[in-house]
Length: 335
Image (cartoon, rainbow, N blue to C red; front, side, top):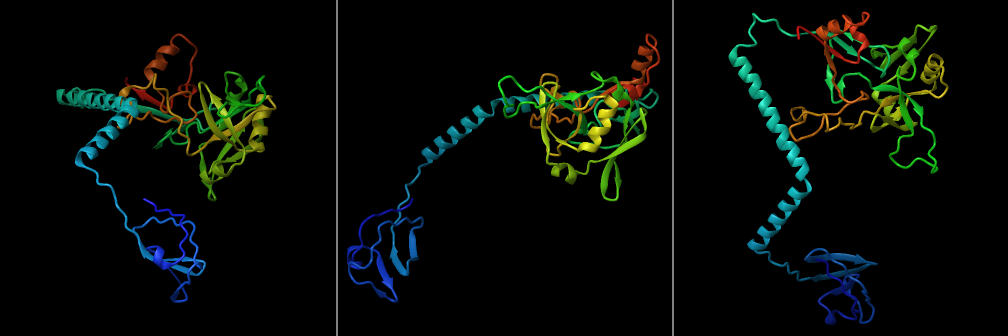
């Protein structure tokens, strides 16, 4: 522990401590030490206004028995299990489901159901939407990151929410709301290109068939996004996501197409931890420790798939609709 004393040390004879200055002991009543606080068992040299305090302080540590140690371990373990009981249940369920899924795959392979003579399911299309609710961009190859398909729906359009009747927005409340083709069909004319690295900048080009003579570039480099000063709490269905405003040039361009003066283009932050709803997440899709997958600015899930057969069946009842008109980013044949 720490030793504290408020006794007046008049002379070396009245205390186990000896006061020295200039190589010799101080005269009586010349050394006054009103408070001494020590954290070690030995005090070799402590300077107090030119005075050295020399001495030895006995320090006794209480002995802890094996029984007391065992009790502390049991209490700590029970507290940990109680506090993280929900997380442990999710972890157990996730690993059971993942193990069951692997078992099913192994049985199918062992039974020969995945033999070469059968028609295999193939990827027929890859798409990303650099800006949520704008036109899709077809790709020949891509990669995944923690938010889903790389560069898919990292930007979106927002409009400000009405000021609440109780005054100012509270912390964590959505100040803006996502804005899509559901509210403005002319957004379907805007095309956002795949992000391209040009001169050390990662740029997205915005263009529209309604504004043939105008276009604008948006820099979505990670360093630029993190340095953007204007931040909003944007409502996205039931979630509130922190986003950064990418500037007036992009907002002005989109506002002309949408014929709305308060539309802003925002970008997801790199350290965003938005996760999908546990209500709709299968246990096998969780991480090995029960973590829910993260998502970007999609409606709810990081990966959306469809099949050409489903589209063909739908087109029998509707006018012809292309596969890129859907929100799916991966399309399959033969399924």
